[in-house]
Image (cartoon, rainbow, N blue to C red; front, top):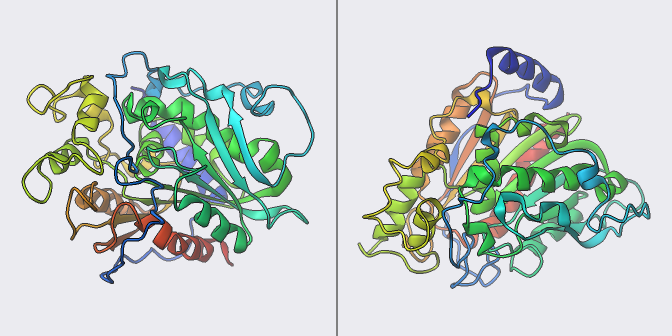
Length: 384
């Protein structure tokens, strides 16, 4: 795995001062203990059997491309043609969906990406703010509960909004270590921020990256372990920030939580404890045969000790959800690693991270219930 040099770190720290607008006071940390009732409009867009981490068989990812050492961005032609590769220059619809066939085959999975868009606020003039939402592992942007309400909420606040399914199915999203998804996610982000839709409806000024569960995990690991987040399509011209709900940043800790649950028995719903094991050790993996603390890829996907300088984006808000609730039914990602990563970032003079605890709101609902806290936080960064 390629490490970032001291020159790269210094260069990009100076660059981020101009691009990411990271001046101002350090963010305060808060814990919200208000109880939130579970609703059917779940933040991950999943039902009880197919949750934010998704369901279905997983493989050991042996066919996946190891993108952790690949620092070269895709060719401009990869996404300029849009979803069908036709080169059609007709302005895309403000609201709708598009397939991104350039994703097919990435991470060893024969599935496209999908972008679901809402730029209804930007038809008279391009919007200055864009939010890119990364779906949970169920890939629910199109039909999952919660995502459409989040996009509509951002549009009502004057944003261009796009939700990314970076796989087509929950099975596809469980096939490989998170870091190996970097090329697929990078292609989708490039299209979401520089493709025809973005060019028509966003000025390029302010960019908010947001995700839940798998969508708060793989993109953040990409930032920590690759150089892809240094590319221009990961940044707005003035402010760039990340707001993430319940990401998995310590894979052994996540597996341990799912293996014991709240009642001391392995979780089978909403996410089976075997999904994470099979991601790294192949079909049929068990806790006895798959030690994530010793697995090289699982450790590469563990980022709580990564130096803040590895992150090209300076401003973060990170949420843990449901830490006081049943570990199988509501809280399926351990909270301490989220807080640990956020605090580590916040100790850096060049980064800020606001940690928010939502101990009474579950993993399945917290994003849709609390996304507006991302919006108001982001606007505090972008308002002079």
